[in-house]
Amino acid sequence: MFKTVRGMRDLMPRDAERMRHVEQVSRELSKLYGYEEIITPVLESYDLLAAKTSEEIRERMYTFKDLGGRKVALRPEFTASVARLVATKLRNEPKPMRLFSVGSLYRYDEPQYGRFREFWQANYELFGSTRPEADAEILILTNDLLKRLGLQNYRFKIGHTEILRGILNQEGLNEGKQNSVRQLLDKKSWEEALAIARDADVSQKCLATLERLFETRGEDAFKVLEGVKEIVQEYESALAAVENLWKILELVKDSGAQLDVMVEAGFARGLEYYTGMIFEPYVPKLDVALGGGGRYDKLIQLFGGESIPAVGVAQGIDRIVLALKKQKVSPKTAKERSVVVISVKNESMAKALELSDILRKSGLPVEVAVMGRSISRALADADRRGVAYAVIVGPEELKEKKVVLREMKKSEQRTVEISNLSQEILAGSK
Image: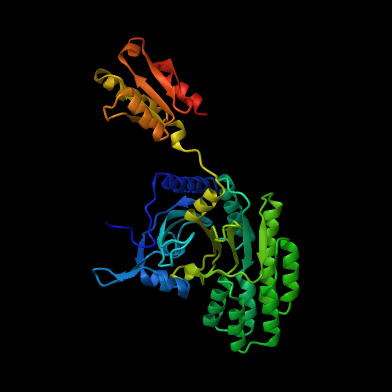
């Protein structure tokens, strides 16, 4: 018997419906915020995808040589592909430029709860602005998406990558060692991160500063940032980063958006291209990030483009679905308005097909009973599959231009005029 490849999944109808619902809401939101959708290839040049991602992701990419001998890879994230597009085909587009993309991504991770080798994301990227209101928009948009989906009790973990970078740059740590520190912080390995700094012979002042930073976190954002200012006061770039994060969070607060925030001074994300604010939305009891994003002002330049500032977020569709299921939040499904049309006799089958077409044009999902079963068996099958309404088309009712409408959950039926059939079903399904 054939099985799915390890780490890949078959999504059954209900799970597929949940995934598509999150995707649909994500796409609708992109239009409300002015983000235009683009579609990039699943397969890209290995060099493009490896250019500025983390060493850990580089090692877990699905890579191979194509028939032309070129080294290619399945995309492990969207940002490199979008950056390529902005550096080339979209380089002359006016700024700001807002782009949306959605689709599947691939990493050879160890399969576990909330982590798959094939997974889906909805991506929002804003290009052209260095101002804090652009960062604030990405935070507000993410909050808006999760709220629209009905998720409860989620938080935002927020930090700023330039706080750590400002300290380590001033101490003379090279980029390789800085990346190693960030990777360890991303895994919450604070002692190991300190050990790398210690082995690099940074000053005692630096070690003391890092130790205090790694322990600094809290829900009162501005109180935490006041504390971080005091800790990094001798590191000019780090202090500027704290001021930047303060302005972003102040804008979010003053906008009226209500974000439940956890500011974490030692927070880091695995990708190497971040240059400013970074964040992850999460549900505390789920213990996995629902997505993640931040500012990356130098990535477009890396791919041969101009220096274009950017900020974005990747929403983890799979993980959002897991969180919604955990909280027992279910989207309204097509089944709640679904209809099966059953013909009593063969001679009324053409009318059944005609009626099904009329109902579909009213926006109702309709199927026609095609197995030739008896009325009782056809109704039992419809009930088993959760169909909401049955329309029974019989010769006697047709003579009076009527049909029988049955509400499956209530096991109640009545005769209705064909001219009113769509309205009767739509009114009952509200």
